[in-house]
Image (cartoon, rainbow, N blue to C red; front, side):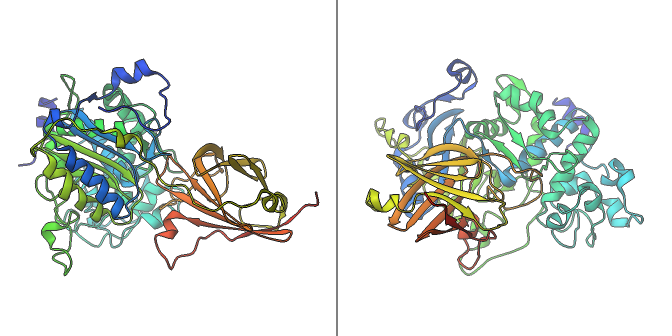
Length: 518
């Protein structure tokens, strides 16, 4: 039975990894999750190591991993150059936070999930409001069942007024009936919260969720009219993600306070609608984690688990029966395969026989391999280093310069420089058009802004320099290949999203230039 608004009102480990150093150790310790060991919480370390080995063997690129049991962190790791102090783009994992903002608004009596969407935006309605548009409820936005003919996000984000553009889309199904993944429907939830409260979802959640949980530094993109994108665009630290999962596991309670009614958590995470699809030759429906039902911006999983997730493997997995939470940030195309490893290795590790506490130091040595090259004579490199004047290009760069130091290569494009380590990652900030790679264009700032980059470079021969630029607050990277021939250079780009599709081609045309005389 669906709880009413009255029901909601009634119920109103291990050492830090890598090179990261906390800005405020005392402040971090005060708000950090408790640490324990796998053995102390009844989890087999062998299962955790088997998961890490299987992920590596399958070629999955993980950026962070954290596992909680009984409210304690029992395993955590960041693959250098990622680290615990950095936020990470969440893509659609953002949706679960937007749903939670709606939950707070419901608990405060500001709206009901049965309120009609058109009631919030009378000034933005199309000239003719169809019966189906008029019938659309907040609940239908939350369950991805507003009735759209096609997923409208790509069309809506091309407009300046996203609310008006969404309301103008063709609604061909009765709302509440047909599941169709719909990121801009989540944006509409964000817009409703802002319309009712006068605050963005980020600002609204801060005193209600983020501050009580000790989560800081959260970022969220906005549409052209200043509304948080809702369905994507949020960035948060790994431990913040884990705290959110533990908050859900505890049904909205935190340190003795009921922040959000347990009835809302139950309602938001239960089965509401079945996604279309069935058995496939290579995977039965029962083993497909995208066919186990959908809640209010939460996915049901195999068994009794539920999750929030985002493109390329941003996961918050809540396991109520096991009193556990598993979070991951990643860049992977095969998200089902990533989940399969959780079910195969981590789930059986819970309550499995445990031996004496194991050495967990391997989690402190995780890293993504920098590009590998060969030793190139210094005199050969010296022949191609220098400043190159570029031909007119889409990136708007006029100059590319190359400098080699003992342990680093510096690439300069006009006024911005990327510092690359030799078989190591070095951090810098630079602003280049078209970076970082993005899956969805909506919400991109109009101006080119500086991005945090961890970079490494290697010479593959005397005339080829390969740089990897990791935008370490996102899942993505660029491979930048510089080919030198006499006094000329050609610089080509391949972003990591495009690289997942062998037939795709990076949208950025190569840069070509001629070396200035010494």
